[in-house]
Amino acid sequence: MLSFEKINADNMMQTAQFYNYKISRTSDYTVGGIYMWRDFYDASFAIYEDMILYKVEFLNRTSFTYPIGSGSFAKAMEALKEYCKSNDLPLWFCTVPEEVIPVLTNEFHGTIPGTPPRDWADYLYCAEDLAQMAGRRYSGQRNHINKFLRLYPNYQYHEITPDNINRVIDFLKDYQIKFGKEASLAQKEFKGALEIMPLLDKFKLPGGFIEVDGEIIAMSVGEIIKDTLYCHIEKANRNYEGAYQMIVREFARHNVTEKVKYINREEDVGDEGLRKSKLSYHPTKLLDKYCVLVPNN
Image (tube, rainbow, N blue to C red; front, side, top):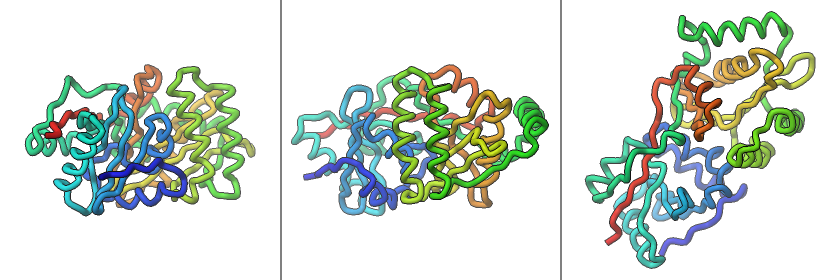
């Protein structure tokens, strides 16, 4: 019988070793994504014969994420079916990437209720696009960047390190006071951001910030898995015109390598302002995530 364990700072990296087995570029199997939202989704995990299985509360029902790892997928599915039978639960899967939908629907007779929630689709970009902002379609972003460079030519970009991380945390707290949104999800994101910041070194998550005249005015934290850079946190003082465009570009420039081909800037969770902003950077694709109900008989 599967035994699920709550996620904490000590066991988080135990699960991270499995993420290189994921075949999609969705943001759900990432250290930052899972740790920051572990309480919101009441997330727990079980490791079963070299496969990682997550149990979460999603859309007001107990659901599971698609099993990944080096073990047998069929055996992992049998273990989940037995768990659901023993606990009188339907076998729901959530945040399922489109790449593995045929496995659940064709091989395990799963059904998909309706269309995937638009609010939870990830925004995927070509890494070079955000690092260079070249071409006519990025003229708006370049205008903001050029104005920032004219106004603040002495700006500096720094990586987040144990020596300066407390300054970045203070910036986040100040940002929340000045610009924080009252929406529940925004409040939970801020809570998750504060919780993960002291763990960046432990979790090996890259971060960076921009300062002007010794004051931090923008920051970002992400994660690299295979060919994708994931952006978990991105904040900027909007009183500095172009600060958001600058942190998007600089964070990309300092983390994009020959290996990193894509940047996932995650969901807009239905926030119209976020949606407009993320679309303005011209994603190459929106990564839909599906819910699938699999018979457990």
